[in-house]
Image 1: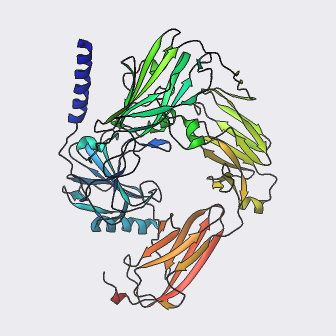
Image 2 (image 1 turned 180 degrees about the vertical axis):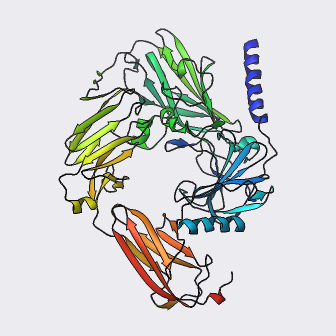
Amino acid sequence: MKNTIFLFLLLFAQILFSQEKYPKNYFRSPLDIPIVLSGTFGELRSNHFHSGLDIKTQGKEGLPVFAVAEGYVSRIKVQQWGYGKAIYVTHPNGYTSVYGHLKKFSKEIEAYVKAIQYKKENYETGNIFPKKNKFLLKKGEIIAFSGDTGGSGGPHLHFEIRNTKTEHVINPMYFGITTPDTKKPTFQALHVYPLTENTRINQQYNSFKVNIKNIGNGVYKADKIIANGTIGFSINAFDRLNKAPNKNGIFSLEMRVNGKRHYYHNLETFSFAETKYLNLLIDYQYFKKYKSRLQRTFKKEANKLSIYKDLINNGKLSIEKGLNYTVEIIAKDFNGNKSILKIPVMGANTNAIFKKQKDTTAFKINAKAFHKFSLEDVTVAFPKNTFYEDIFLDFKVEDGVAKIHTPSVPLDKNYTLTFNVNKYTPEERKQLYIANVDYKKYPRYQHTRKRDSTFFTTTKSLGSYTLKKDVKKPTARILYFKDQQWITNLKTLQVKITDIGSGIKNWYATIDGNWVLMQYNHKKGILMYNFKDKKLLGSKHIFKIVVSDNVGNTTTLSKTFFRKETDIKR
């Protein structure tokens, strides 16, 4: 009893410390609408944890975004993907706030960024680091307007708080950026794994799904497991907040065995350098096959995530004959709402019905060594520590397609894939590129670097690759006006561009011979120029755009239009 009280007080003190070590009332909300989230901090995403909060903007763009505290603009970045238009504000209390997927910046910042874009003649700016006194901000000052730029799936504001010195991201909810949540997490699935060669579970040597039942009030119960040897578990769980139907990530995951904690992690903070190890936290093979993420309650040896606490034997359970075990897996959200999954485990001999087939191929990978293999006209080269563990690699070339294992194995580094192109003429080589063809209907262009007799690419994904030929030019079509037309009332000039081969690489647009900034909405395939950017002299103008794909096929479009600038309010 005393030990139980002590452990409770210790846990309570740890939670209190975590919540008190961050200032609660220093930051205001970045928006002036009620906070409703479509994404929470630490959610499991493709190859990374979600590093902030995704705040809904009522399905609209253009909502004012405010500086959450006084500070200065320390970084600005405009890119086609990622955070799109993003702004970073450094605060005097040691933290930096980040705002992503913006439609545009405030008037002064927007003018500053556009001047750089026009100087570079490029929409993407790279990182811009203004001087500290360039844009000084007060708490609550408008710095931007919400949008849908970059790799956004719809209008929202991506918001982060980082430690300025370490660049580690911290859950913004610790700073009081919260939303009502009284709902318990939901368990969807439980899987069990044999973790040694001699382990048997319910007469099986493979991992499998265990039936679970919701018995009410946040309590779930699993079917009994009979095992001997070392086993591990994984779960699929989500959390819902009060004001939104989204399936969000959980905050913490714990496993207790006969009342004693064996596994725990939470999403308080992490570094960008470690986020790739998410692929070892989840059952990556299962995810690639079923597009569903199972979180392990045991830690793989190569996993360097810093989120773990209080691990016993890395969360692996040694089940002994004649003993019974009560396993409890506890999922919590940030507000402390919790659900418990109870798993009865009985230790007993259980022989496998089928024998496990040994995994052997001609290509043995020692994870700590460099490896290079060649078949026909294809070579693969893996730097040391590309793989997290030793494996037998499946590698073959069939009908020009290099099949490099399966995409179900996560990698820590890029490897190099090289095709010998000696059999192709110089003209044919111009139209060739390396493509991933795991989805045959939708081959994906891989950044292809060309030498005289070889093409090569670097990638972090195993799978099927081949050389594809692209002989078709991109298409470009002016929207909303025809050649020789007056367009005084149009606010923007828009062009629809498409490419069905290697994909759009770049474009270069001019009006009367002068470069103009065209923002690309890759979701709709539309380039847009805002007439407010520059005052046009005269009434007759020539618009010209050259669009190129990734192998150099180009399309040129030219249109004449007429416009009275004096009719447009600036």
